[in-house]
Length: 423
Image (cartoon, rainbow, N blue to C red):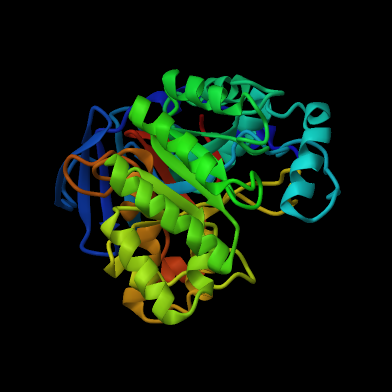
């Protein structure tokens, strides 16, 4: 798979917008979005007699227009999509097909990845850039990405991801989770690497199945929380363990979150157990997570028990949506299209009513602000000028169809148009 003709940067893409005219935020009335310093400075009713756009969403040779005015032609506007659980360091996107192999268990996938990542140049700036550009093509403008930190790599993966992000010039806003994919306590020295990553600026430290991987949930979590308290970073734990084993580990995290004062900074990724335990147990667990200010992220996996999204939201447990890995040594699947994944989330959650479909869209956009360190990520004054235009009647229509992204704006710059990536 090769996409050089669709990912070549253009000088015009660097030109900032001043006005994105005639768009319908969240399917509402037509407005003009005025942009300054990468943020939305004003939202005014659309003025058909206003300054004509010298660039349009679909046909402009120069995506920003000579005067920085772009015409949205009345298309529906959403905030930039937020990928709250990514692994941009792992992908082989852009390379020849890599056949799936190894044992289909968590430990088997870890071993297979460790055996073959070097021959594929993983992690590497080129492959990381390739998958990041796929995110941009599909309208993602902000991510929380887990980056492997282990005894073989040290912190090199984080350096690679930061270099790739810099190449995009701000088209993707990112927070990094230093992720111990190969375990924490069972690999002496990994806790020190996580501590070093936090000291060097990683916004979060990660964990992985404290019970089934390290076989010491108390020890792993104590180590992670000590680092988080020392450096003021967040915690984001992959928790695949299901049923009561998973619920028990969530309870350990709740206890430590309250004790350490890290409310609002602790996330459970996957958390299959929450969807698996009996209803009364689930209600108590969700309420306790809300009291602790914890969050969850899901990748809407087919075949897993769906998370109780309504109950989580009512309890104040924010939920983020992410792609997980994209064409990596764990799985050949993934396209980088978070809007299409929003469709999957809605279907798995049995969402059918309009308000439910809007909720799904908000999970993938505005409501995910906290997962990328933002106070606001919406099409409002003061919000980042991250905008995705789609040809859809309304938000439910956009969620159900996941139409092609006509225009993607990040930080006030046009970064993709009709499938062409411009950075």
